[in-house]
Length: 145
Image (cartoon, rainbow, N blue to C red; front, side, top):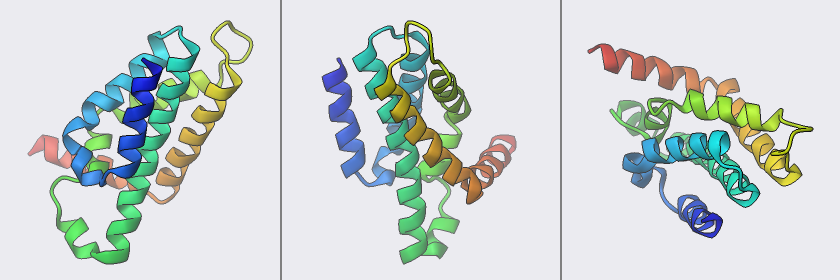
């Protein structure tokens, strides 16, 4: 199963963020549940890597959009970033934090911890650039309409 997840991670890394929009809710749900419920270290490790890959995909989308066509990106109704935020990304973030802070118990694994740290660093960059908060405002506004 961890091998299958690794293939998914590689596909996401190679794919255009827009092509992942319809799968994003399921991927966020998958990462959250793997980190909270799985006892397999290889699966948890790959789940944390998947979370990191999703956040890095959001950064990739943002950077690419603003380097080529910022007007198109700002006018788009749905982006990978808004879909990520609208998919309970906050729960995935909490699961990554809990897994990262878990030292000393039977589920602790240094490699999983390192991948969680990578994911949290990418999420922090999204926060520092106000990408998450802007996407959340858009999602909240869209859900009220």
